[in-house]
Length: 389
Ligand SMILES: Cc1ncc(COP(=O)(O)O)c(C=O)c1O
Image (cartoon, rainbow, N blue to C red):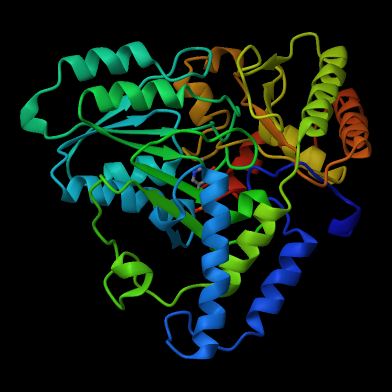
């Protein structure tokens, strides 16, 4: 089956490049010139980058001049943590709901690391954070706290404003990973660092951005040329920035996506009396659903959906090599409700009612089977690479 006739429900892993993005990238690639060069060719390239930065400033709700282009969300999170540690933060508090981009960077930072617990709802435990900050040892330097704006598996939107206010009351620094939230929920917050990535909104892969507040410490992650006002060495990705700009311009109201997601969940509930939808009671990204059925392994379901032409994800399952392991479900302490793991569907700008109908039809067929064609152990063993989408 060609991928064009398949149903794609994995936008949180990556959203297909929008046609206008492909046009913008190819047009920008026809422009000759290094954006750092002073001549007319360089100025033309620089102009595209500046326009993209302005558009990002509006989308992120921050001053465009405080935004630096990166290679993606991972680089943004790593740079923020590197900056905080270089400035003397000796104890990092990282959300247990964070993406490995932040968790691994913090593990690697060579300072103390504590994971901020999640509540069963999928929301960060702000009371725990408050208590920890109130008992902060000044010898640990300024507190540093990392949180996602919205979890990539459940889509649950975090109380970012309250977290920022709390951390700032204690003279701390906050990184907000807005990679999944950009374009799907409001970002009117003022953290110290905020990272985003183009490929989650139909932009090109390999370009992202980091906002750094003028008051926050910054330490360049890579040494080299003086690009991005000496903050991010390396020739600027003009085509990537143009593609990011085109994706931002194409962002639109996604009320219909929420409707499609809710229709899909209603259809599933009608078929599955024991369905558990993680974070259902909370404010979630309108495109995301993370659910489990107690009697079927997520990898088996994913593989069978794949055979029926539907691409979905098991979230971050398999990252520990164990069937059923999901970072979010584990952090929420609800593994008992997903003994065989969970499935994530994530819709996007090009999703339609016929995708939802196709998914529900495939699901119905699969669940009528008495034996599945792929055993969960085989499926997991085949997935060597860690899944972090
Ligand atoms: C919440 C979150 N943060 C960071 C990343 C990493 O972004 P990138 O792929 O641009 O490095 C992802 C990607 O899945 C993500 O979902």
